[in-house]
Image (cartoon, rainbow, N blue to C red; front, side):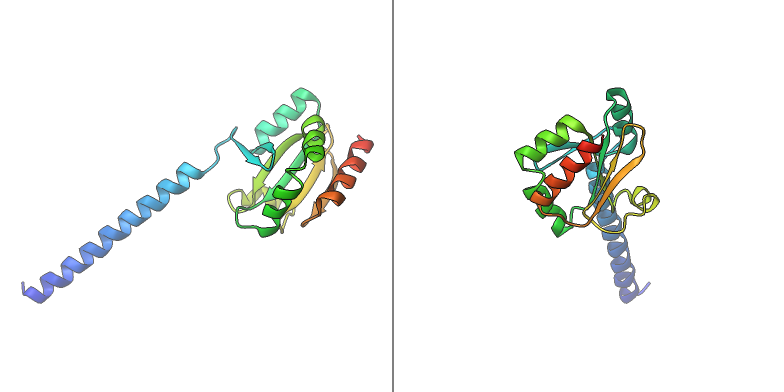
Length: 157
């Protein structure tokens, strides 16, 4: 083989090896950062289930309604809502006392969002103790309005 062909083959092998290494690193971070069933996430001052089934099971066991919160890590208005509303002590107390909390990442859990016709974030759905939908809040809502809405929903339970 000529020296030129050896250099070309060497470059191809190097590129393929780097590609495999980069893919492996990306896969490792995706797996290590993914939420398995039963995991929790802390948002604002609240702790949410990150999977539907364990949250629903807990809601049935405690005879509590469900607050289902759809978000994504890159959603600006989700971050604002979490810093404002989900960090407010009145809202934290009401949600913790009255509901089982479940948070769904719309990028990582696309099927759940699609099945519930959720197309934007943030997005909130409230379910009663029988699993019947009570209310939806599509998009960002200021904490004062969210508190009013939350109290309205609680009064119907």
